[in-house]
Image 1 (tube, rainbow over the protein chains, first blue to last red):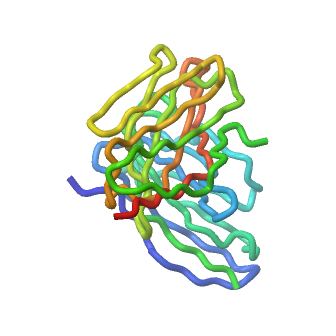
Image 2: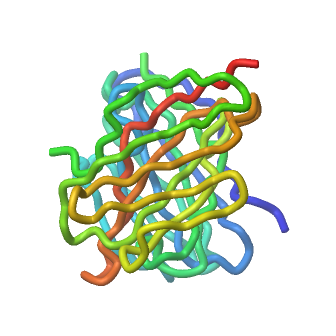
Length: 115
Length: 114
């Protein structure tokens, strides 16, 4: 069974631009969660989608948004990029909602660098 | 306010000895806890979990202990192997409080020296 895939793996943008990251979950998984990992803050929860509906949202500004499609694939968008948005963005999928004891499977991440 | 804390950013252990990674939490509603391991250039992988109705869960070389009164959990790896060198994340959720996301700690980098 194929794992969670994320595209692109690496991305370089400049301040003020916007970016869209993509995540394809494991086949059959309906939940997709997004996390931001930075050296100082560890993994911080961005949002979770389940059956195309946002079920949870972390404490991030409105510049960060996401969506999920009917095939469970998910995208996250960051508008008006800031230097502090440079991070590893991780996507994780699970059969059910992530906080309900279902094991999450992580993708390799997208490394975003904002110059 | 950090609800899940891993106060040791790094830990070095000799091969064959025990590794003990610690995690503290502040939210008394947390009732499900997990450990993830992360190698460079890879996403975290699930290692072991424990529900608040238990105080110990074992899986091979890995054991997680939960002390609810102290709001503390620990991961024991015995014996430690060089392949265990990775960053370990502790995570928690308030499962019985409804749909809440996982909250992760900042991670502890374990180095197992041969």
